Amino acid sequence: MKNKFGFILVKTQLGENIGACARSMKNFGFSKLHVVSPKINFPNHKTKATSVGAYDIINKAKVFDNVEKAIKPFNLVIALSARRRDINKRHISLQNFQNIIKKRQNLNIGLMFGPEASGLSNQDLSFANYIMQIPTTSKFKSMNLSHSLTVICYEIFKLINKKKINNNNLNLKISSKAKIVNIVRHLVFLLEKKDFFTPKEKKTFYVIKYK
Image 1 (cartoon, rainbow, N blue to C red):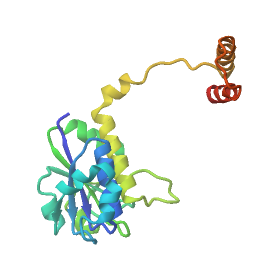
Image 2 (image 1 turned 30 degrees about the horizontal axis):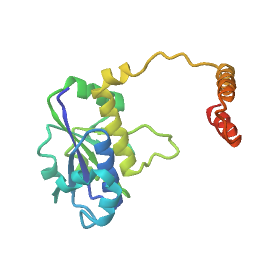
Image 3 (image 1 turned 90 degrees about the vertical axis):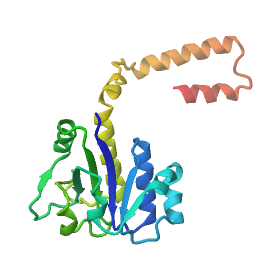
Image 4 (image 1 turned 180 degrees about the horizontal axis):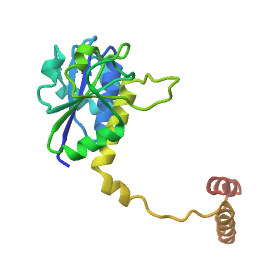
């Protein structure tokens, strides 16, 4: 799959959230970060602290003064919103999003996230091709910025690495607790014969740890 993904953070209010977003991006192999009119001095020390080992992404991030400039490198832009908007844009599910990625390969795809307090404005949304909402409980839909970005990163990563992930799902048979306890007891018996448990407290540690 040859799609190229970038993440667009619009009017972010907290440097910590930008840093946490960069960290999640690096966790899943993404590096293109566009920051639009941040409400803090960017980057600041809090951004660096929360990015941990992903400060290279912060250093390479491009800063823009408006959304229109930030989205220019992308062929397709998908905006994230916690609530359904009354705007003439198609609202898509995560499943729709995955289908779009698979069907429209070789595209540069931008994922756009709004400020923490208010989300994207209708004007910001007008630049997007689609609006996507991450499914949550109806009682509390608002998600932290970095958390929502992490969910999207994971969904893309899972799709791109589908074969690798599926190959790791081995059909292992899980033994019952009774069998495990019997094995541990037998091992303890054999170790006792070899005077392994010296001092005696050592036996208690191993029996508790491996039960």
